[in-house]
Amino acid sequence: MMIRVDQGKGNKDRYTILSPRLLRQLRDYWRQYRPKDWLFPGQMSGRPLDRASIFRVFIEAKQKARIQKAGGVHSLRHSFATHLLEAGVDARTIQLHIREINLS
Image (cartoon, rainbow, N blue to C red; front, side, top):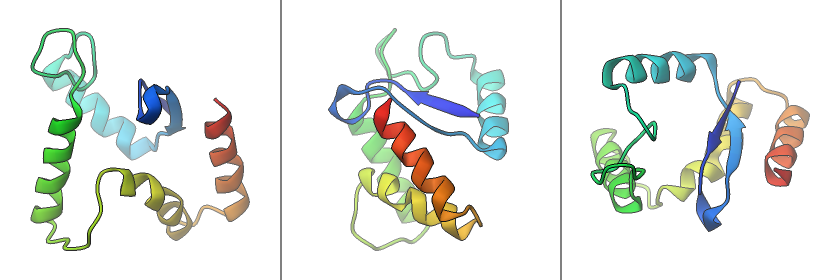
């Protein structure tokens, strides 16, 4: 139940937790669109979604959710552990998982 993010910040590949709900949503997305090279392809064939597009989608989602707080896409990474705590995951499990991600 992990997902790999290719060429994330600092051009590093990273792994993170994949929840059962997100797995179902990604499978539904894949069945509908059948992307070939990348799960979220860019406009250019064989290329991933670019940073500007990701930023645009993030801003649109913030506007739809009526979130006025400042912050960019990277703020999602910072809030990840907080959301896990709020979902009932114990702090030690989160700490071990984040350590594992940073080592990979």
